[in-house]
Length: 173
Image (tube, rainbow, N blue to C red):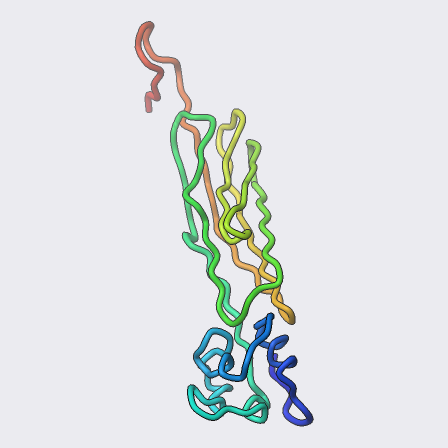
């Protein structure tokens, strides 16, 4: 999505377009700074010194959403497991909302919790399951655009005959 190419542009237009929010001055909109990405479409926007509203005709607010880690898995005999936190980072403005959802493809019951303003999630598997896998999705909504990123998660519980009396349970391949 590009900024208008003619007509009047206001500082409020910049705040909305680049997701800047709050009170901002023109110096907050230098190319390569917090809000304006340093991409070819924005080559006419200065990186320092004098800047004007007219510099923003045709500007683009490139939004990127990155999930890390992109894959997590666990194996074991436990019926409960907590993954390492899944973190979403974003570039190109401040999001107006971050929504997590988790779906599984087979077996088990999944739940997840969020923290740190909704930017991290720690999904967990609870209950008795044989195996299950699913996708943790994060949808980040900016003022004018929505981006979705996914993290694939899987969980497998090893099972087998009980171990000998007095010994621990085991898995005999």
